[in-house]
Image (cartoon, rainbow, N blue to C red):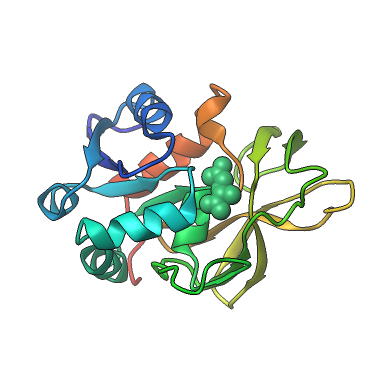
Length: 206
Ligand code: GLN
């Protein structure tokens, strides 16, 4: 799939499930490296923002002086993939969060934190995912959903049934992908492969 190219993909390593993403990316044939400083960010062909606690990661982006450099690289078209807390950080607007939370504006969307509520805050389901030929097992852990997207944002997956049926849980805009759920914990590499492929062959005209 990678045609002999081995892209260097960073995993933002301030907080969250960094190791699981590193393993998934390596299994896809990428060279995966943790990113904690600006020089490391400058050296990657793409970046994963992992699940964890989005307000904590936001705070640490400021502490580590990564917020503006990361916004800048995203604005220049850096391929990125955010899972769960990573999706929240990639949004242009976040609902139900702290007023001082910083967002990266990688995807023109409004995301609601902890959207599934306390009763069902962690669950699994199979869902159809645009571009993949069979269902993806989606693990949701205190997950967000996408409340609204702007024109130009592709919806890749929605919740198939239950009280949250129809809610948007995977999106793509240009070279940036986000999922509410955690493919890095299931052993199914297809979402990571989709992303690594984007980092090898970025879409033009971001
Ligand atoms: N609820 C977390 C947040 O708001 C996200 C949970 C996760 O990444 N698994 O950041």
